[in-house]
Length: 433
Picture 1: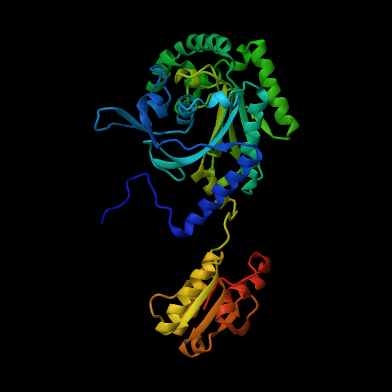
Picture 2 (picture 1 turned 90 degrees about the vertical axis):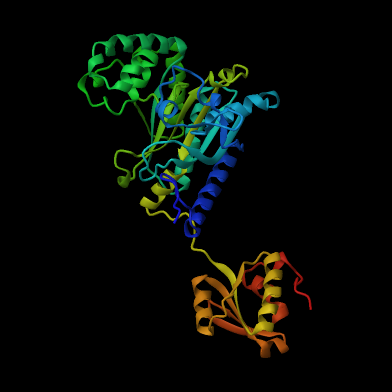
């Protein structure tokens, strides 16, 4: 038996409705904030993700799926959505028609990491990107969108962890201070952090190996090295969150996992005990050089992403059911070949008219067909055999009220619509003799 690759999963029919509902909620929230959908390729030129030799993020250095195609071109399966969106923004010159582009995406991403609950090598990600504005208020809007999505899924206890990395001047000064500080403890650093000390010292603050050491806790904080402009900008973001009643905590060590961030960085946490300490459900920040790094004009941007599996896990752990149980409008029990043929005709007409229908295709007994009607949560059960067919009659049962009537087969569609209070949707029956 051939099995799925490690770190992947199948979304089975009983689970797919939860995914569909999640996607529906995402689209509704994005519409409220006027974000438009963009779809980019699942694989890109490796240069889209491997742009900077000094990029020390785990995603870039350890986790990407890289390969050569048949023309010996470097190809990478997308590990995240932002870089691909930025590439599409530049290539298609979206900045020409819209000074501010507000975009969202959903789709599969790929990272080679240790699979665990809610984290897979192929996973789905939802994200938003606002390109063209350097306003602190649009930073706050992106954070508010994320909080609104979490709440729309029934998760009420949302906390924003937030920090500022400042502008280039502030970060340059802070990096110098960090190098001087951590150089004294170089022998105590993990191998990754020894490399980061040379290439990108800010990333040391994101280390999960060294963070519990005493010298790490005493490291200089970036807030002490922000210039006045960066401080004022960060205060605007915080004031905006206050005005929207969004709870936040300033986390001095929050730098995020990608190297292109500046100014605002944030994580969205939910209070879900089953997640333990890993309760971050979404994250993002501002990036002002990514578009120019990909060959476009100098364009500021801010974005955020959620792992969709994490969103579904959180709702399940919290006892929130996104989708209702599957149901259909009508189940047809047709007894005899002629009746089955007529049932196909009537079902097709009902489906064209917007009603979901089903029948048995295994020649099951009458008892088993009633069980299947129940299993499909059918609102109505329509029963007829060849004797009823001669008179073009059928018995129809409303499984919600247990009321049963004998009606014309030609009236099945309109009868169901009237019971569903949708008679105005269609004044004439589509079933013809």
